[in-house]
Length: 266
Ligand code: IPD
Ligand code: CA
Image (tube, rainbow, N blue to C red; front, top):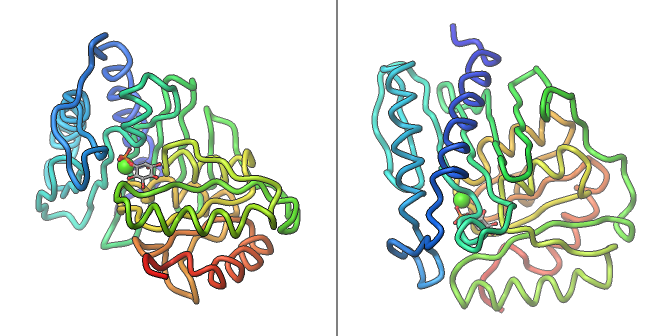
């Protein structure tokens, strides 16, 4: 039996250690090591160093577990437990030394996310959650903001790295802006989900996230009382991830479907 609270504790410890490496080991002249899906989808030497540390710590503590990491890919295990790792979520913020970036570690047992930790050391915050155990920030239990209605909703979102998708995402935001309180684009999907969890925004949506962006934060938001899902009853996925308290979720869902927020074409 894997105890979700113990897995969350270990995820937090490892995320905090990686966070310390990222704060204290960040070179003053940090540059781009390589690029991925587009010239602005960057990897720094610190993304790879942090993921190496996280993989080493998991292998030491739980040698039978599988790991799926943004930079290093999948590594099979035998225990049924998979660690889903984003060493730096918000890499562009990290590159520019903006503080909104995080180490995100989710833990799945037989494909179900049961624990997660999101450490944001430059914000002095670490979020944790485990299945049935609630959501926490720096040891304090957190909960979503109560429903404000669509016109009162502060909505976080993010944009992909490819020009065609961004073109469409811009159009969706243009359609949404007149109908909500305002929009925020902080630059880290994991932190956006934690912001829903602690009531700093009312909702978050994004097309194009990867599982390591949303694994830990999605569980933390759900444990804080959010509905976290895709469109039309689907699970949260790369196609669409939407998180908000139940009533706001329903209202925003319908507007975003109408605006075609899960499409890249017109
Ligand atoms: C990105 C961030 C960003 C989101 C992108 C992600 P990365 O992750 O979470 O906020 O808009 O979709 O890819 O590249 O910084 O790990
Ligand atoms: Ca990421």
